Amino acid sequence: MKKVLVLCSAVVVALAFMAASSIHSVSEGVDVGDIAPDFNLMNVDGEMISLSDYKAEEGHEAVKGFIITFTCNTCPYAIMYEDRLIELHNKMAPMGWPVVAIQPNDPSVKPGDSMDKMKERATEKGFPFVYLMDEGQKVYPKFGAERTPHVFLLDTDRKVHYIGAIDDSARDPESVTRNYVVDAISAIEKGNTPDPVSTKAIGCSIKTKK
Image (tube, rainbow, N blue to C red):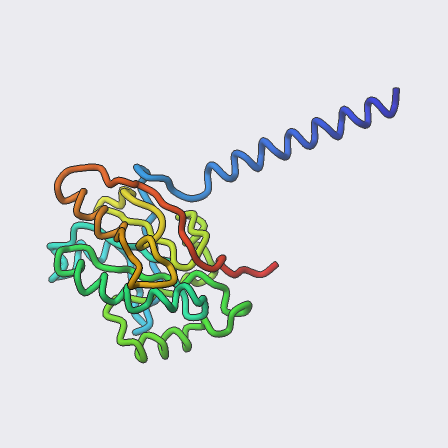
């Protein structure tokens, strides 16, 4: 009888844990159609940047949305996408859709992703977009980012319209046949829903302390 009670108790605990985990996973991150959180993060130039700044600052009246991209210095996939991110920003920012790059890795785990290294990389590559440090790793879980790179396309009300990869060829830019972000923006500008609204982000896992 005692064994049965112990077994039942273990099952109840396990079910409770699974339910709690399920609730946690649902509450973490955003889905297409959700309103993403704003943030206030330091750029490589030392300024603090929020999405609300793009509405308030002079010269940003034409902003229609944001290509939020979680990326870093050290992931080979992120490195392969650097030139494409620069090209994406240069093409889309004048249309009102700037790239907002956020570095989510813990620098104590990946020293190459420290703010000093971010500054070096931004200068070396001539990043035309802001490159922000997710200090304390507080922002990426709120979005639900899992990889570098991982894109969240928002309008100026921070409504999420697309989540996933930049395009359909992580390794070879010459093999790209679908520019998911560009296509999603084109659909939004025509008043349509992007197709697809989500894809699998291909890249490195975000690095945190064990």
